[in-house]
Length: 114
Length: 115
Image 1 (cartoon, each protein chain N blue to C red):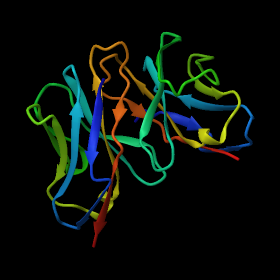
Image 2: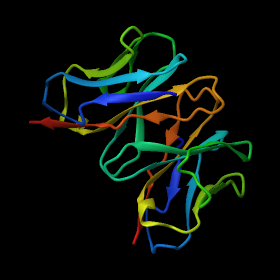
Image 3: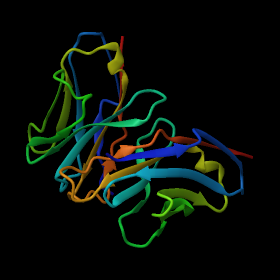
Image 4: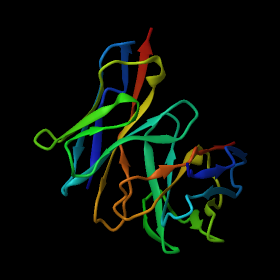
């Protein structure tokens, strides 16, 4: 069964450092998303990406965040200068169509900023 | 704006008992509604979805949910709880035909199943 793959599963970084979270969406999917879940809180939408550009972003997704699909298979989330409050589980998701009858989620990357 | 409200952050049932997890939604357009399950240290797995077809939706692992427009509800039920059902459950809403198809999640309900 096709699945969304995220690496690494856990990343520890020092405050102020840049991190790149990587995702390989399902191969024939066209819509890609990043969500995050701060420990004990709900899952929050960060950004959606289609046709090599951001289609929507939340107010959380400020200038320190960026996304890229560098090679047609990977989908990355970069946090330029991490803050303690960026510590969270980050989920990548993909879907095949705009109606989003099903979004498939990866296992998540737990980011810990120290 | 769309939103979902999950009543009860923690629900505890005995093995074999009925599971009822509540979700109410708010949407100015006909919604798509979803229930996702998250097992410890794992990602989100889709349990079931409502996409404007049948109002009673059956999902995996014996779960089902009924879309009730008059009550703006999409409660998740399972007739008989199993120990393996212990997990966190998230209700989510999305709108079809929108510019994007982001999911708006509720705060989650942690289900505990007692032996």
